Image 1 (cartoon, rainbow, N blue to C red):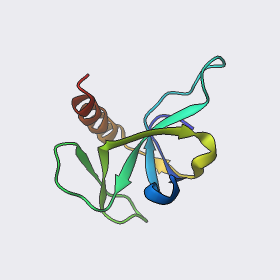
Image 2: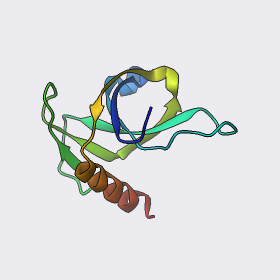
Image 3: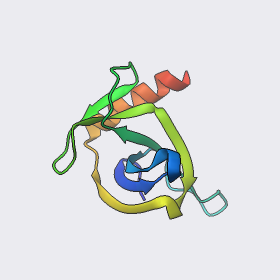
Image 4: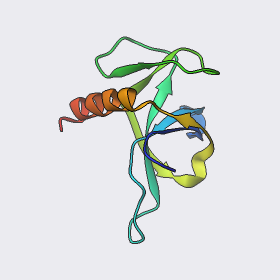
Length: 101
């Protein structure tokens, strides 16, 4: 799994199965085998922390940087694609703003 990839992930009962964007880098040998992601939603609210996204085969939606999570690799079902670099930059900017970085 590589930063910038879009995966279908099973986030459990509350989070449901949905597309997510991989935000973290590949862990090293001594690191925990965890993956940090941003959820993709089709229930947009127009917040300052959403990045609109459209792709073939997906309903119009947005990456919601208020929906950042971390889990192990077993929750990721299959790769859906790779995000365009310009959109990834927008996600990074919104995530930094949300986290105050």
